[in-house]
Every structure is written in C-alpha cells, then in structure tokens.
Image (cartoon, rainbow, N blue to C red; front, side, top):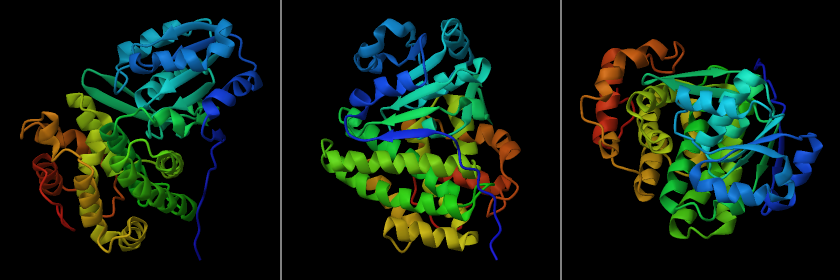
Length: 356
C-alpha cells in the first residue's frame, strides 16, 4: 500500500494565448492593489510597461536592475523600491521572479507573476540569494506568487537558443522530482506529463521559433514541471547547479541543461522506476542517452567548459556540494563519484549509466 503526503500549493493560474493582455488587469483588480511595484529586467521593461498600461496610475515604482542568482545588493535595492507598495508585479524570467521573491520574503507583499521564459520559479515557494559567491536557497510560502498569468505569446520573441536552455531547465525540475525528498505519486505523475510536453515542444521550437502550439506546449510543460518541483523539493542536481552558479556566476538555464544528463546517469541504476518513467515520457529506451541526445540536437553547450569554466573550477567547490548533497539520493554521493561527475560535465563527454 502506497503511503504519502501531498501539499497542494495555493496559487491561481491563468493560462492562454493573449492572457497577459486580456486577463492581467482583472487579476490585479481582484487583489485590490493600489500601489504596485513593477519588476522587470531591462530587456522586458518595455513589454512590462505595455502590459501594465491599463493600470499605470497604480505603478508607484519600477525596478529593472535584475541580475541572475539575485545578489544580496540587488535584493536590498528592490526592497527599498517596495517601500510604499501593496503588491509586486513581475514580468520576465526566473531572475525577475527571484527578485520579486526576495522582496516578498522580507515584506510579505503578494506577487503577481507574468513569466516570459520556461523557468517555473513562478509556481514554487523556493527563494535564492547570492552573497560573496555563495548562493543560499530556502522555502517559504510567503514568496509563492499569488497569481500567475501564463501567456505563450510572450515567448514568441525569445530566441530559440534561450528557449531551449530554459525548456531544459524545466526538464531538470521534472527529472529531479522523481527522487526529491518529498516525492509522491501525484508529483511524479505531473512530472511525467511535463516531460512529454517539453519533449514535444523543444524540438519544434528549435525547428521553428514561431511555432505557436509548440510555445504553448513548452509553457504548459514548464508550469507542470515547476509544480512538481515545488511539491517534491530539490535534490542533488539543483544543489550542484546552485553551487556552481553562485560561485562562478554561470547562466542558470544553460548550467542546468548541461549538468542534468550526468546526474541522471549517476542515479538511474538505483532509481529503476523513475528511470523507466522518464524513458517512457522521452520516448527513448535509455533515458540518459535520450536526454543527452536531445540536448545535443538542440545545441546545448558541450560541457561546462563552454560556459568559460576552467577544468579545476568545478573541483574547487566539491566540498560545498558535498555539504548539501541529500542523504537519500538514489546513488550515495561520494567525493570520488562527484568529482567524476563534474569532470564529465565539464568536458561534455557522453554520460553513461552509473557514471560517477
């Protein structure tokens, strides 16, 4: 008999092409917001202002100094901008949502999120801050956006390369959900369905960035992936990527896309049910090979070295990763195993089951 606990997270999701234009004003009204802090990175600021035009008189401050991994000084500046706000509206990718969460963490302000990538952060209660090259993450329900407006049309201008990296970041949420500490049958079912949507949408976007149904598939897959991750929690893969990202200021999505097949290769032999379900969702008998081949076909950088890391850089943070490695990882995490995994991920060699 299966026994489990499932905590459904209290967020409202509005999904559909054009939803950011047709539905966002009413969602803002529903929350009764009168003094809104608008957060958007420089590249999304024009879009954010266009979307908020119907209630522009209620935008009391705008913050655009968004940076990946949310450095503590960025969080402090955004919190200052929120001094008179009663709601945060964030328009953008994971870094933008992360900045909004940093504000909510200390102010308790509700968030309305309008994602423009496939990050998934908008449906999780996970926050992250970086200080002195060290990224700290935590979970707090106060940072979970109150409402998320998903509009696939907003991703049509996202370059194919960024779409692929962001979509594979979402794939990492799915794969890890199968062995994360709070995994359960519900989160696993959601993760498997998310993989199917992502596996369909990613190649289609790479072939035709203007494929609207594929954009919708990816956005739906990203939502489901984030939902599964939010409930199941994070495991070894995210610990590795957060340490590397914080220490070397690496691009978040690309780092996840590169590292994921190697963590799957390590865990697959000791997680046969998860491995089988991931393989089925990917449509490949070997999930490790299937995931690596998908990334290669989509143009994922060949190893962490392509992101500018020296061969010794990943090895220098082994102790930091070991300190965070989950005790219940399907394959016990050893120093030798982790070092081997990082060497392979740096070099970009083809991963094989049991590697590490």
